[in-house]
Amino acid sequence: MAGRPGRPGRPGVTAVSALPGATAVSAPPGITAVSEPPATTAVSAPPSTSAVSALPGTSAVSAPPGTSAVSGPRAAQQQPDWPDPGALRAVADELTVLPALVAAEECDRLREQLAAVARGEALLLQGGDCAESLAEAGPDTTAAKYRTLNLMAAVISEAAGLPVIRLGRIAGQYAKPRSSPTEIRDGVELPSYRGDMVNGPAFTTAARTPDPDRLRRVYHASARTLGHLNTLTAADGGEFWTSHEALVLEYEHALSRTTPAGRYALSGHLLWIGERTRRPDGAHIAFAASVRNPIAVKLGPSSTPDDALRLIDLLDPDREPGRLTFISRMGAGAVRDTLPDLVSKVAASGAEVVWICDPVHGNTVSSPTGHKTRRLDDVLNEIEGFLEVHRSLGTHPGGVHLELTGDHVTECVGGTYEIRFEDLPTRYETVCDPRLNLGQSLDVAFELAAMYAASPVTDRGTTWATA
Image (cartoon, rainbow, N blue to C red; front, top):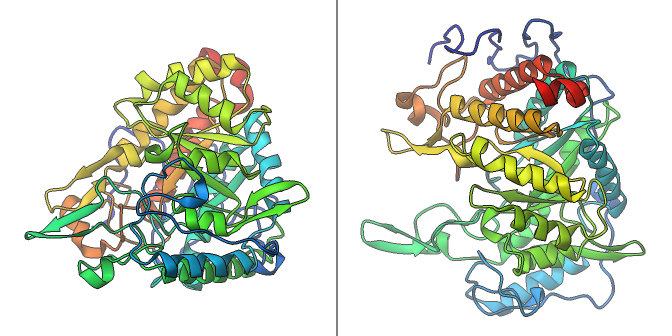
């Protein structure tokens, strides 16, 4: 894994330091190198003590296996098959009377900032673990991800000439959808690992049995993470926001609160609905429509303009900028063909949504070593295609959504400090999907900075529409 002098076909990007403890980074020509973002782009996490308490008499209800009773008559997809409904009900009831993790006013503030992204006045950087781990959650891992996003935001902001909103996949990203409810190894079939909110990754009956107590453990781990973020950002005087996929509806409903302004999901500032659960008639969209948080929805290559317009009607009926974000996750081979029609039809509707690019989920491959991985060049190719589409349409490419870590793992291949297929077993530590490591994350930041510098967002009415 020795350092190599850049990658072919991507000139003009200087190598970045990937050594432990390094903070200084080099920049592309014309972009000032930075060590930490300026105070105007730093952001602070809310203390968990600012949370809103549950209303008297609120309680969670149990559901038949595979559905969520709290979602009403609509069956919820991707739900655990909880073996003990009584235990689930008891934990959910407990969560309804614990302090919420974030405050409604903070969600409103983030929505205001996302409105600036929708207007083309800011950018969004969203990143963090594929799935957080209860065993690894702590101040060191939180600090590493926080510093990585700080550095990336500063590099991108310098090039684009716009503020960058930092949004972590953190303090709640403990559940994952799966393509199959079960996994078979050597003739043994067990429930699939659905994230630490539901069960454990070890391939044993005990670990893979969904355990409602994990909802409680995730709540307390998320509260501690928010406390760590608050400590990190206290000196910056800015704002840092949290997000996760709203997947396990018992958890989300139990942490929802009614305020004078309306109902909020106070497990995080922004919640997103994934590609597998975005059915317009599904329970997850119904839940998202019932709360006032900023909401995001992932759109894959099977998405149609009618899908997007229907989601706008359901989730943003008042056409409020900052309310709805679309996360494009097309894959490098599909983004240039599929995305233009979506973006143009949404723009023609008059809805002011935020568009950001998830360049990782559509580019997962299997390596010769048997590991799931992603090629950094595919990630960069999809980002480039995303920007090309918006450039051609004169619309705003609002940012990126990445699975990353601040650690020096070996899960994705490529990069200035190149990870090869044979290097993957060295530090393949993810509990689910492969993440960009620190050096690869900074590679993405510098490449994206170079793209923005070549076609400034502030000139999108001319340069972006005609380049």
